Image (cartoon, rainbow, N blue to C red; front, side, top):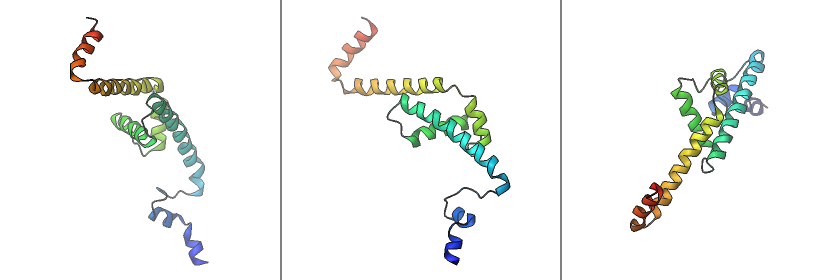
Length: 129
């Protein structure tokens, strides 16, 4: 019974990297409120980013969110601070920016696939000449 008793203890779970920290029962409701609220807001933003650029993985989208938060000097590890920051974000503007970058990149890839002789003609066509 000692093995089973030690198996799911907070100290052991933290040592294995399964949890970031242990919390007291008294603080658990507050902790999970902020944790869930952050995840809902963050996952909504990530979903919009992935809709704007279907090639983005969840991990890549999350890295973008982390980058933007750090650029705004927001502590990414703090659920409360992230919620506050996420609530102020213009999700549609962020998604449009990601979509614009995706489209530009895709056009560049397609352009580079054209034979060299056709590139100048395409540029002239696009310039309206």
